Amino acid sequence: MTNKKINFYSVIIGTELLNGRRKDAHFPFLNAQLLERGWEHKASFVIEDDPGLMLNIFNLIKSDPNSVMFCFGGIGATPDDYTRQIASQAFTSGKMEFHEEAKTNIINQFKDDAYPHRVNMAYLPINAKLLKNVVNNVSGFYLEDRFFFTPGFPSMSQSMVLEALDRHYTKSNIKKYRKTVTIVSSENDLIEVMKKIPTHLEFSSLPKIIGEERRVVISVAGYNQDEVNFAFKLFLDFCLENKKEYVLEDINDI
Image 1: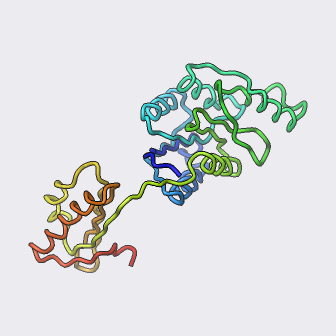
Image 2: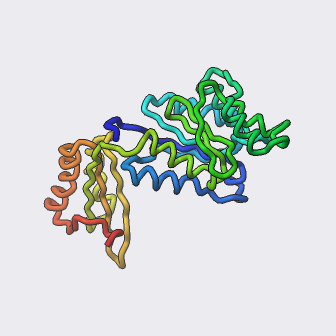
């Protein structure tokens, strides 16, 4: 377990996802695994095979001192697999080397067919550590115990995600407090109350129309219970002052 607040990012690389030729399975799998362990995504990016865009996003994530990144795709041997090279530019000042264990794994798996191309998948940013590939023994890798790079095939990447989380980010020990209320009102009537909610708290307003009746599901969450209770009470006070009906539930869950 860890008491540190961590911001998880995913970067899903593949032009074929954006043009509709493939459907993404990485985000739902990773997101479910994070939630199961008490973590949450900070952001997720789905991008085409564009080296400049990849570098910008890697640098953005690196600039967050509390970031942990899972990157999917682009670590193969074809000319459009840029991830290893761009990862080195972002995280190891462009320095790369043949990882001897990764190279041996590829040679053992493919024998003579490891050359001339497959063996290049062992050319990694310096100081990389390996993630086991349960399908074909071509490893994923990670840097600084927080930047993880896996293949674009879910059959390969999912076991790597589990390995990484089980080894380094088993479970969050930080408790998040959440309070929810459904108010018989329009969102417009609640805007002045919404403006009073501190920006560092997680806040959402989800409108719903049932028949002729407008309702709003308000959710307030954060890591300080007193702050959450105070912000939430602003909405309850509004309801009492304006004779608005409410239930302390999310009507979408009923």
